[in-house]
Length: 240
Image (cartoon, rainbow, N blue to C red; front, side, top):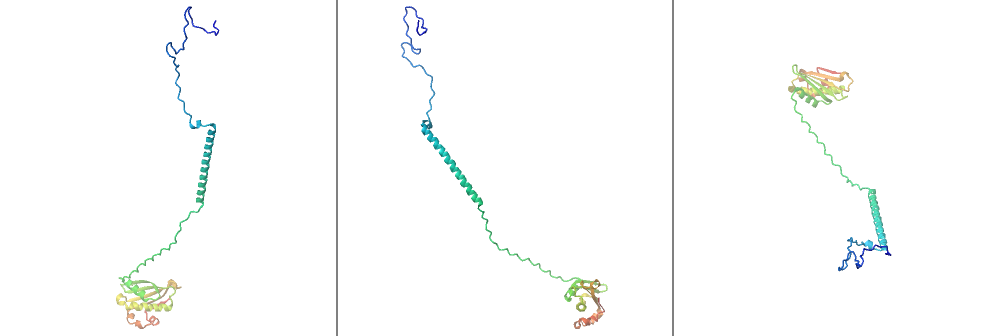
C-alpha cells in the first residue's frame, strides 16, 4: 500500500520504472524556465512618496503656513485698499475756483434818429405848424379850413390848469397875429380860435374863444398891441 495514499501510474511486471520529468522538460533537453505572464511596468514613486514620514509632515506644514501667509497678505491689501478708497471719498472734491469776471459793459441803445419834419402840403398842416410855433400854453391842435367860405378854425388844447382869463387873452393875441401875418399863404377871410382846458370846471372844458375877419385884421397894428388892447378889437370874443 502506498503510505501517502497516492495513485501511482500503472507499471507492468518486469518493466523498468520510467523516470519522471517535469512537464516542461524532455529527456535530453536542458531544463527551461516555465513561462510567466508579463508583469505591468512598475511606476516610480514621486518625490513626496519617497519622503519619510517626518519629511511628509514638514512639507504639509510648510504648505499650510504658506497658504495662511498668502491669505493674511491678501486681507491686509484689501483692508488698505478699502481705507484708501474711504479716505478719498471723505475728502471734499476740490471745486474749480471761479475767477471774478467784470461785467460786460452794456452797449448803449442806439438812439433812433429824429424824423425830419416834412413841409406840410395842406392848408391844415401849414396852419398847425404855425400855431405850434406861436402858442405858449398849447399842447394839441385841431385845424379845419372851409375853402368855400374861407373860414379857418383852430381848436387849441391848453396845458391842464392854464385856461385863466389872462392866458386866454395872451394866447388869442399870439395866434391871431401869426395867422393874419401869413394870410397870403393861407387865404382865409375869417379866423376863429377856440381854447380848451381839460382841467377846467367849465362846461365841455371850453374856456374862451376869439374871432376876427379880414377887414379888421388888415387895419390892426399887431406889432404894437398888447393882450388887453387886442381883446377889444376882435369881432367876437368870449371867456366862459
